[in-house]
Amino acid sequence: MKPNRILVVDDDESLRRITVMQLEEAGYEAAAAADGPEALQALERTSPALVLADLRMPGMSGMDLLRQIRASHPEITVILITAFGTIERAVEAMKAGAYDFITKPIDYDELRLLVKRALEHRELVEQVRELRSTIDRKFGFESIIGHSEPLLFVLDMARRAAQADSTVLIHGETGTGKELLAKAVHFNSRRREKPFVTINCGAIPKELLESELFGHVKGSFTGATAHKKGKVESADEGTLFLDEIGEMPLELQVKVLRMIQEGEIEKVGATEPSRVDVRIISATHRNLQAMIEDGAFREDLYYRLAVIPLDLPPLRERADDIPELVQHFFLKAKAKVGRPGLTLPHSLLPHFQHYRWPGNIRELENIIERLVVLTPGDQITVNDLPDFLRQERGTPEAYNLELPPKGISLEAVEKDLILRALEKFDWNQTHAARYLDISRKALIYRMEKHGISRFEAGKTRHEGEG
Image (cartoon, rainbow, N blue to C red):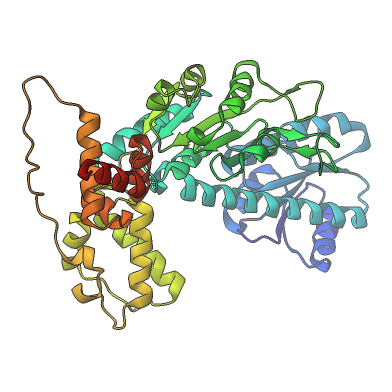
């Protein structure tokens, strides 16, 4: 289809000839047809971007031709020519899909302007369609790489969740792709044309989070020099993604609960609530149920957020997906760095599959990019791999533990293991976490949970020796 080609359809030969000439003088490529059936044949032969057709023609009317074009060539723009007395019919035709109409006698300056506007509109529609296609490819469920059973199970649930407006809670370790899954749910929902707005509850200071989330009115606090729209309002009619929801302060959780229950928010400093229509998708790497028991997270909010819970599996449970992910990130990194000739032998893949990837997909992507940047030759070798990938991880030695007949405290065992690992590596958290096959963040969380610190450990040991 040529973007500047126009088909003129009119049973009046003189008008048809003059119109074609005027369009050609304006720089368009114009063809002509005397009636509807001839026009339909010309469509297949000339592939025009726009059809200019008389509304009243013997046999097949302009309205009939419009319906045929809309049915078989919906991408073609149609403008109708009408006599003054049949404007009502022209308006009816626009409701049926015509772009616009022009009345006889034709003002050719007006026609050229109308054609220009119609083709620009068509080009804009094509750009939007292409953008939508790009978004679908980038954020569709197909963009989430992998075919392992644990991943496919989650994606199947997410596809079904996308069709409803229910809240979704995505749980997964850091680096598993929680935001990518949230975007896939949004862009496959009825809200896909509306905003997808993200707020990271752990990245904003507690005293600023309420204003960021709900907005504020001018003069509500020092520095509030103007009204500010919050993230919730920005997401109206779309989706609000609350990342790291487990970091949200308790006092703010109450207001989020009200937003979900009542569909209302109250800006900082406002005297009246505002209505909002948002779908909530939240995500966390933390155990919210354990936080509920500790009084750090509201139980009523948890159940409001987790109508549809989705658990993203860690990469160590998706070993079958690792070769595909390696290849994807390798091609991406080569394009980014500008090393198209670099190769990664298939024989190296087992090294990637045997590692436990505590940082999950994010860690894998970073390692691949590092290899692409730092490998000196044209092929990545075993010697180019980081130390932790060179050695294939075998089955860990059994942890010898005597089970006493009266029972044992799991909490105490976990605390003891963490202390031993930290002491083994002179309190290097990165090495201790790798030894325990967990992420550094998970180690820090467990240290805080058990009140483990180097100072306390030294103090306890000193008291024991005394």
